[in-house]
Amino acid sequence: GVLTQRGNMVDALSGPGSTSTQMFTAALQDALADETVGQILIDIDSPGGSVYGVAELASEILNARSQKPVVAIANSLAASAAYWVGSAATEFYCTPGGEVGSIGVWQAHEDISGALLYEGIDVTLISAGKYKVEGNPYEPLTEEATAFLQSRVDEYYSVFVEAGYPA
Image (cartoon, rainbow, N blue to C red; front, top):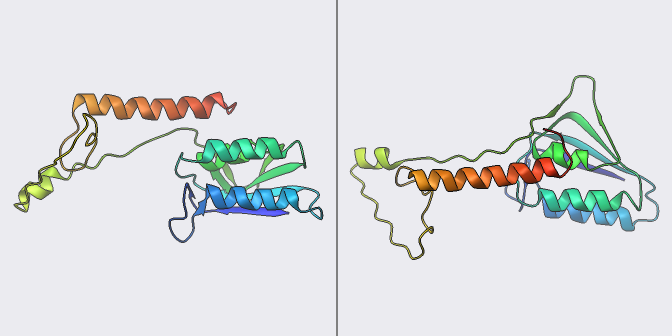
């Protein structure tokens, strides 16, 4: 059976060109249950995507290896989250002109407070809970919020590396 990953990895279906980790896992489980499928090929062409659900999908692939051979190919790109998925296979190949790697995690913060102020829009955030509005786009990041977001990025990166995929 051939499982194809094209476009971004996402934790839920979010648009054309993306594959959710749930849908990918379901296709993997279908291939495992199908007695006519002797081997699973994961055909990847993806820049990666969201970290959410990728560790769980990689675990499913690792478990699948005990039932059927699982081979992955970067055809022609397997970066970041897609590299993590491919690396969980029994064997992982790359087309001659392909690329693999880009192990890392990032998060963006857009501070639109200046643009809103320029337009005469004043946003007031009303919240409960000390960290509920941390990292919102309506105000600059505080040092505390920056440190918190960096700690989350570092934590996800550690999970990625500790899963056995060299930095």
